[in-house]
Length: 336
Ligand code: NAD
Ligand code: DAU
Image (cartoon, rainbow, N blue to C red):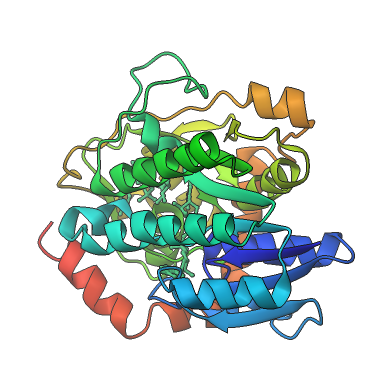
């Protein structure tokens, strides 16, 4: 099987490429990534030169490049991870989110249709469902009610994927997962940001009361679920993927501080994120029943593996927080 993976130098995409090349024989991956601030070839260490892997620096909005790659490789599937992925950035400037997440997805869909690519997997998010109250879970039938420019852009791309399936018969699936954590996550996201700050005895900026709830999913488990969808998903279906690990942000930060033997006095409650979704929680029943998927770790196991990985990969972490990251951090947190 030959697959085009987009965004495969980012956090989840690189974990997916690594899992596919390590665990599945005879799979050829062409990995296209623009290498934005979030893309990093060091995320592919040990796999960049793998004989079944070809990396192409490029933009998913570049229709002629996508068409050329499809002509050259005759892909069996496209798996679209490429996106602008950080909610806080979308609240500052939404334009690039529309460009990549909406126009980029449309470009891929048009090329897949035109060139008759047999499968198209759109990696989406539970954030398209909006926010939950204290009870209940998102199912695949929950209404689409995005609250941030990021989630609105992802919902738009999901609608385009659905429309290309419905109107033109493109064989698509959409996966919607909860918050991922694990190896190679860029420290703008909550867990690696808190690990990095704690390691450096810097304050841990907890938004608002810190009682927001996320359903944490270990990135490897997300990747195995996407593989199941790619190989066995029913055409046109949406599959939810969650970790069944609901935690408040304060609980997560507490676990990190305990593991790193740092004091709770490092916690700082800072100005909240505008429009902050209170709670996400996913019902993965359909994915588990239909595709035989289940997560391999609990949050307590996964977070320890993750913290230990960051401790063992200080060079990677120090590299990604040098340069541009410093001005990002200043602009987001200095006056918060
Ligand atoms: P990420 O920001 O770490 O990586 C995104 C990658 O896409 C980067 O390598 C970047 O260089 C690349 N990219 C951005 N614009 C591009 C373009 N125009 N053309 C080609 N490449 C481009 O994101 P992530 O956390 O790995 O998320 C991957 C996907 O999973 C996204 O679609 C995101 O919406 C979705 N998702 C993420 C989470 C999460 O918790 N991180 C949860 C649910 C869904
Ligand atoms: O649910 C899936 C989504 O999860 C993905 O679609 C997004 O791509 C991904 O970024 C993530 O979105 P969140 O906004 O939930 O993740 P983030 O890591 O930014 O924040 C997690 C929680 O932690 C959220 O309640 C906000 C809070 N937070 C975050 C940061 C960065 C803080 O309290 N302090 C922080 O500094």
